Image 1 (cartoon, rainbow, N blue to C red):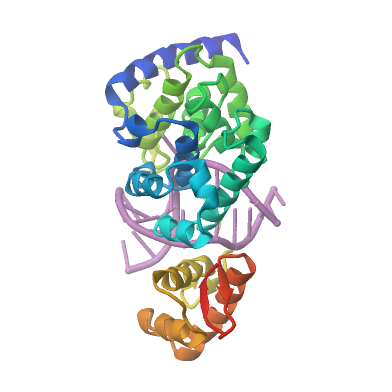
Image 2 (cartoon, rainbow, N blue to C red):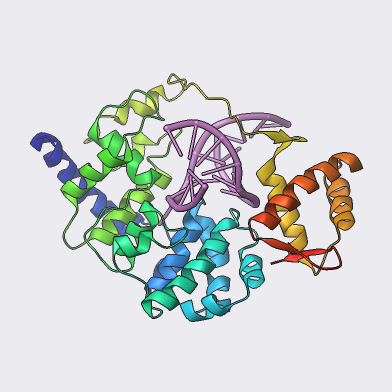
Length: 308
DNA sequence: GAAACGTGGGC
DNA sequence: TGCCCAAGTTT
């Protein structure tokens, strides 16, 4: 990395850390999280989910499952129910399995190495490093989309608002400037700036604390000029919605009360979403088969379905 | 490496 | 209104 670039980034870092002291986003969980288990839950909830939504679920989840042992021993159906409304339900299954792994392999202690964290289901490169940074105060780089966007724009003059460096390059840049003592604050600062000012569309460069140091600070003025080629989604649509939407709806219905027959599920789907009964039946057939195969639900002897 | 995976908010 | 997006991971 060029020394001139590194020098500019270090300057930006000082400025951003100072900005963060007064302008950090206010989330209750930033004050109430007390241990690595809670960081694991919080970071998992945060995957592809707006941080403000964590607030709505984390407290309740931790009240029901206050320790990794309790989560490990919980019924899967209770974990799924506690997750309802957060989306990406597989995260709940993975979290449950991860808790069981931690209890069995690590004596209920959350691992503090990247290797062991990555081996946990649902823990990928970002979450593993985020746990190391936020729970263990380790001197490592955790790169999410905010960190990537901020460091990309700060490192080069980007042409469009969606331009973003490869994660490995961002890693290299961030590792080169990791502060020795304020690494948690540094990552929070990057994420807060990326979530509030250095946002993907219509970045607010005019009020950015780094605008005099940033080669991309002219981005704001040409926000609309940078027409981005939107790649058409290849996701298959079922009766007006992607399949995953139907999966979420049907799983929520099955989770809502006790057992449900196939007919009950079809009737609900048809009525609630104004489908022909035959269309509802076909989407329910597909989705129920998937949810069963993936371990979310089970078919009972009497033919009804319930959470696994 | 592309595609799939939920949900609610912003513009 | 409809599309884009958000503290990514898995296959």
